[in-house]
Image (tube, rainbow, N blue to C red):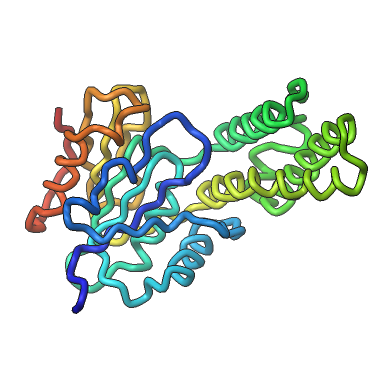
Length: 267
């Protein structure tokens, strides 16, 4: 039998975090074919269009009939590129975002510092010194992203190697383990760098942006025909685990598409 369930593409990075995930909405139980695109092995493309093309190729989506693309937080820019790639001549693919925000250089730097902190915690060693601004700045991120990633890798591997050799590892064992550990963190950092290098394509569709009660990005979504903000009372950690949000997303996806002429915010 042909599977006629509406296809939902999900971009929600599966890293360590306290917040609930799009998977917690359990939309497959509401009759959707939910496909999670961000799974290992992760792409190492350093711009959003290339990263999105890699996802479409890996998951064989070129001919898929996609109803909507859903995304959380800073994966949203890549999700938009995916939506543009799988868009068809009929009604534009719907995009639903949750506490989404464009990636900034400060966000990349902050997540790199968090990667070092988590690595130190994992290795049970003292916290590393903050990353020197001399090897990371907005110009480098914009013009030389490959160099930024190379320096991130170098420092992550160096820090982990030092920690491991100070323990029970010999040099060869430490180098191999440190390299493997660094790659796990680089998967996420490459994802962010790619999202920073987004083109914000206009695909003819609108964005529904579901917000927790936490402060966040509430501006018009770049490239969208219009942006509909849906503010909830949920804390950020629980936004994607509430039955109300799941029901609201389901109701939106089942609406008959209509032309909308302005952006708005609903309570």
